[in-house]
Length: 546
Image 1 (cartoon, helix red, strand yellow):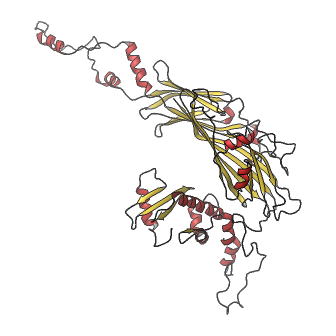
Image 2 (cartoon, one colour):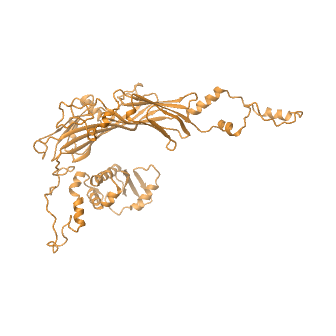
Image 3 (tube, one colour):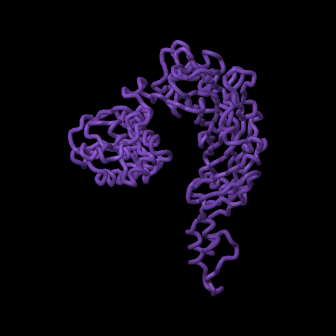
């Protein structure tokens, strides 16, 4: 919005923000300020970013701007973003904010374009400034210009007119030309107690890293099971970076034509429904989701129904491998050459082009970081006799959760965890353990009539007025304990894992080509190294209800 007055300071806004009960939304209305203020907020790298607004603005616009501010500061100050770095580089922060927003109007938000206009201090400039030599500013007056050491004139790294492409710097030069594609999918699956999936989605992002000199024009081809129709169904509502030519995508789904920014950026995002159409209404109970691991929870086990068991089963296609851990970090982050006959492999072999004989495939995906978390009801005092067949499990009464971690080297085909719940003290337990009184349940009761010859009219009349409690049999007592323990059983369990070399949606990179006719400044004989990586993660996204 148009800047009309000074907004409330951070000393005023921060206490009002913290006074709001947690969890705090991204948009909070503050009627007590003058004027009333809308406060937008995001948290990134454990830093709080706040933006006040005195007029109605599109909320997504402001939140997206805050995310871009955080990304731009990471570009200049490094990741992770720290408060000490912001304080020590206040001059750079001021320049970045001035270019991104001026008088309430949003300007350039692309990190590559900001690199051309923001002058970041380097260690050479700080060294020259520390010894009293001019580092970045010329002499302030003409009289001292003759007696001042002039800054050496180096070849300009940017043109005076700037880059013609807003998201890419001009005159980009790299000694090693590389192109990397990373596709990451996050699962969100909910399974009913009968084993029928209620919902299953995969949220994917395509991260691209471009380190190529000049202005390359790239063509990335994606494929999915089912060919062209499959890729259209898989990427129903994609979100693209501004560099992607939408006309080419609409004409040929699966082909991304773009001029990439320099460095790492998010090329596209998508959401895939893993359930087949009509699976929720056809009455089928079988699951068609191809997950690398599944869990089953069995409750009310044992003679008194106080035990439950969690069973983990790995798919035959997914096995953990110790050999993959011995590979280098660079090799594990890249796949083999991108071919047209497979997905990705967990090895990296330098190759100048895609589609050669050394094709990549995802024949041996590896499962890692397996964690099963089970929320425990609050009325459970403790879990006794925790017996995992593999890995280690522990219960935290403070958090109210049971966590079972299984290292990759221990996982074979299945594993089990069995626990016994300890509930609160019941009234019967308290009476039997502390009172010592037993009304009508014990034959050896106290007799307060010491005079055997005295008439027992009063005592007999009192017994007649008091209702007689029938004795509880062992079966009735056991049924009561089973019914009580049924309320102590867990209601759900979540599964977390990560799989390298496999995607739940089946999307893979078919090819990545450089258009020599449209590209500029590549140089003769430049053949960039290309690599791809597939990663599927579940951060508590697979939920099984009991």
